[in-house]
Length: 428
Image (tube, rainbow, N blue to C red; front, side, top):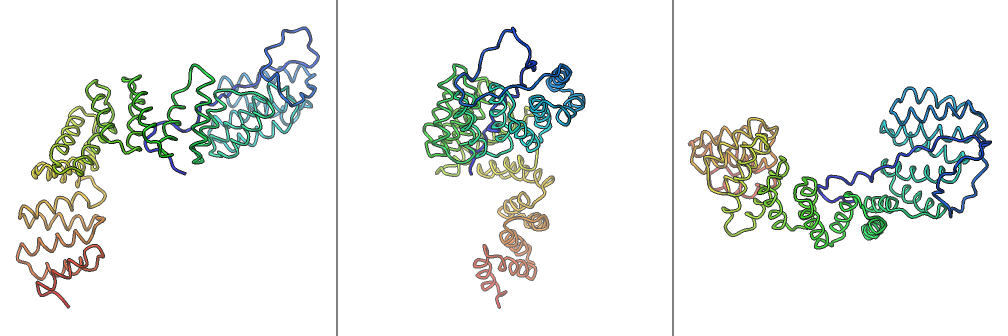
């Protein structure tokens, strides 16, 4: 299962954790009845068995405590009702309250188990029963039980005979998570058609589904339109850029981010770093990489100057790459040295050693090559070759041969290293 990179939401649709209405005694009559939410339901509602006024008051108090976030009080009231009430209706609603507490504590599996127990109890009016069934689908989505959530939604819709925008949004989210992108697109479009106030998260799912299903143009159009409608919204920018990058529309992503930079909404470190990376990618595919690399360096320097971009090892390494691409060796070395100081691997040190070697600064190149190897550089063969060339530049032939033999042991540099060894008397 794939996910569109960088989208900031897509966790789940907003959960409607609505507790059941305050219980009413089965003997109560003459009271105004609320609007029926499921008038066409196929389920035959059972006769309620709430006859104890004491249980009614306790249940109301327990559910009120859940709503108020008073977990300890709620559990203290509701658990005895689950264990001891003679009313299955009371037990069912108490279980729902306890399930909500577990959900709020991120214990999704515990919440699901209690809610399933509540539904299995069955003694609830239709409105309550179907509200809880829909809540179960949302709990399952939160617990990444996407197919189970879809199955619950299908059952809820078939028996409750109800269609809502949020239920189709939940269905679309489930479909997206399962990689069923055409189904996700259809469900989200249906959700949007059922309300005049669609949630922004639905657009994210729709854009991601377009991108993942190869409909990059549709995703890009949506992303740009959404950003243009909300040019001051950082999340709209992030989502638009993520979708454009997913659709490999880097020039459009750059254009969008430059608009944000101009209007002052390019405010996060990730924004600046992503824009710099996009410029570097553009430069690497260009006949003349310097203009784009220069822009990348300017973006990073601006972000660092504003205190938005930190001087981390990764960011300094990126800055070094931009300056190296512009042939500004001194600034590239400065950035690589800063990166190396805080790095946990040898990448920055190896890049610095390569530049120092091209400047014929053999002693410094040797030192940085040795550091890159000791820190665990990914391309170890390249580092050994730089070390060998540095030793050779220092007229230390035995050390050069020893380093080149190590390079010959690495698959990526074996051929070149052995060729060097043959020419320099270090062959077998």
